[in-house]
Image (cartoon, rainbow, N blue to C red; front, side, top):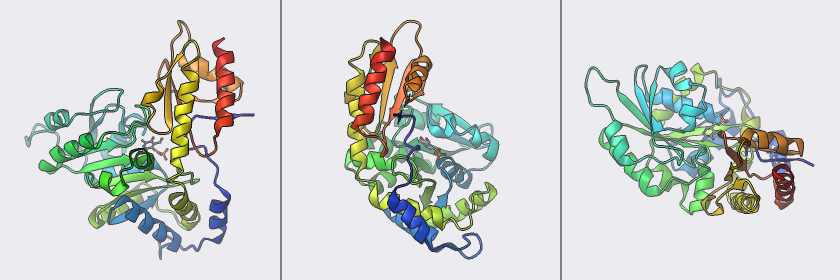
Length: 342
Ligand SMILES: Cc1ncc(COP(=O)(O)O)c(C=O)c1O
């Protein structure tokens, strides 16, 4: 038996997704358009409360399309210190778009509006132009926390007052929607573009969207072209992604309860600490607190017992729940963790 808590990206497509793939009407999305991709883009735009959306292969490409659409080489973006866009996208902001990143805040994923205001560059020839403020919801490294509406709206306000657009990395926005009870358009009203991953908690095999107004999407289409992200009969992928968006949003509550259960079970084990109260969505962060024992070593030992998890820092393990996990997997995890921690 194995249980994979490394990421919510490991899910396998459901029977309904596989059936939708088989049935999908497709076309050449570059030449004449793919009808199933169009449907997904319309449905995703409506769900996100934006005018248009663009289907792309990954969350990374969704973010990078946004960066390319809003900026010019030499510009600066402001983002949270541990944001995916600056931490886990291989330096793409600089490599692809000639951008530098100014990062704010700490491990808690937070960023104060006053700090953002102070970080925005004056209109001065010696300074780069502040071209974009990036937000992330939920915040991955901070442990799937839901960034409060007040923080999102106040950062957005200070950016927009200066004419700076806001991009929301909403890879896990659906988790924030379910955890907060606040609908996606209310969150995205504070952003000029937003990305959403269909292949994380929502369970599609491949794909993300990036959405905004029509002018943004027109520019985004050119960036997507440059990144090689135009796909041909991509309706096969979009068909599964449509099922993910239609069927798997509300059930994220199950993943959230399971992540809390992970924290509850593990915090009782000597040498591991976790605070179930801080588990807001489908990510539980657990700290290894034993001299001479690292998170990577614990992850390796758990792996030998069939439980897979990622170390997210020298002493921190990140457990991510998803639709291919259930309480039985948490039983397996607890048993393995007790054996590993002695
Ligand atoms: C917050 C966030 N944004 C973007 C991404 C990128 O998604 P992908 O792995 O599809 O490129 C991830 C992936 O984990 C993420 O957590």
